[in-house]
Length: 103
Image (tube, rainbow, N blue to C red; front, side, top):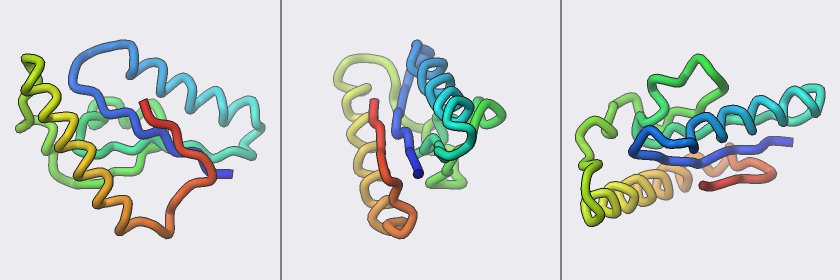
């Protein structure tokens, strides 16, 4: 079974540790019967690549160019990440998992 985590973030919050721990625990306690991957949509997970298995939707670090401060700017950033992820997932439809979590 494949499980993908799609959890974009723009600030240093608990989401990072929670998603990585959840992914690693599922693999560990399923005795590797469950394959988990975290979707790195725009480079937001770039600095955490050594803590889990990731699917990189882009080689570019679009994350560095997106606005992160302010309510309106942060909502715009999440909207851009959603659109980019959605369009890329249509292309990667052969890799769709059994279960997908989003945060």
